[in-house]
Length: 209
Image (cartoon, rainbow, N blue to C red; front, side, top):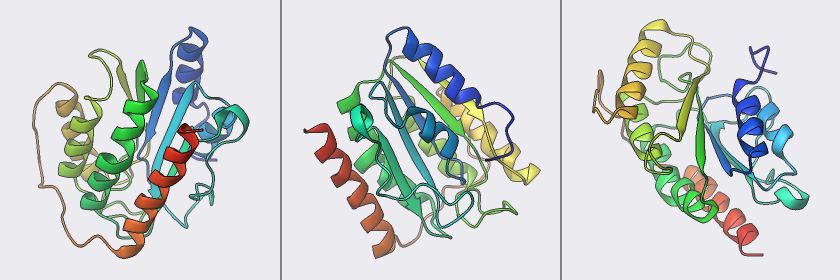
C-alpha cells in the first residue's frame, strides 16, 4: 500500500529464506511495511522489525501485531508518535533490535532503508537527521557477518535531506563516519519508552516459548 509496484525486500528475503537461510528485515521507513509483514506473518525464518510513525498511513503496525502460528514473535513493531527523534531510535535499537538479532541469529540482514523519517520530510512528522541514519546503519552492520547486509532505498521526499541521509547510510555501510548534519537528541517521552519496553517484553516472551 505504499508507492512501490514490487516489494523488492520481500522478494529478496523469500529467495534467501528458500535457500535455508534465516533473514532479518529491518524497516525504518516512516510508513509501516504492511506488505512485508503480511507476507512473512506466519513464518519463523524471517524476522521482520519495523520502526515507524503511528498512527499514520497505512494504519497497521501496532505493538500487538507480533505474528501468528510458527511466526509468532517474528514480527516486531515499534509504533512511534510524531516528533520522535534519534535518541529513541538508538534506544530501540540497543534495547530491542540488537538483542533480538542475537537471539534470532540471522544469516542475512535486509534494510528497508526509507529516509522519510527525516525531520525535513514533507510527508511525515518524525524527527531524525542524517546523523541518526549514520548511527543506525553503523549499529546494523554489526548484526550479521560482513557481506551479508543489503540496503534497499525506500521513502524520502525531500531531496536535500534524502541525499544527506543516503550519503550517511552508504558511508556507514563502508565503515566511514560521514555526517552532513549531527545526530538529533532530546527527551525520550514516557510513551516512547513504553513502546520500546513493551516491544521487547512481547518478543522475549515469544522467543522463550
